[in-house]
Image (tube, rainbow, N blue to C red):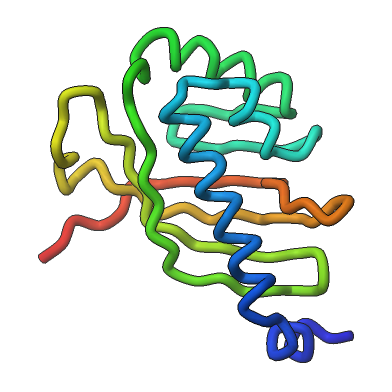
Length: 141
């Protein structure tokens, strides 16, 4: 089935299942739970952020464990989904506007928002992050 045909056939239930992944990762982040957070990533996942390259679920778990114990302690992650595109029955490309809200902040500063591209794969009926790439978003105005 071509990606165009699958995209047209992908229904609201599939999109809700994809969006649930972001709710799960955000909840694990807020809980400071590196194991639960990394568990939503594929075993061989890749994460690329400005100045950071993490490889594999174990690398993600280790880095996030240290971050949750240090600079990200008490923070939360917010994602606003810009688009969800299904490229086959088990592959989705998602673009989000995302931000980390640090402990004690009511709202993050505008210049902290990022644009992120997520490649998701469905394995054993569960959506997982296969690849994540983030970069600073353009300032509004």
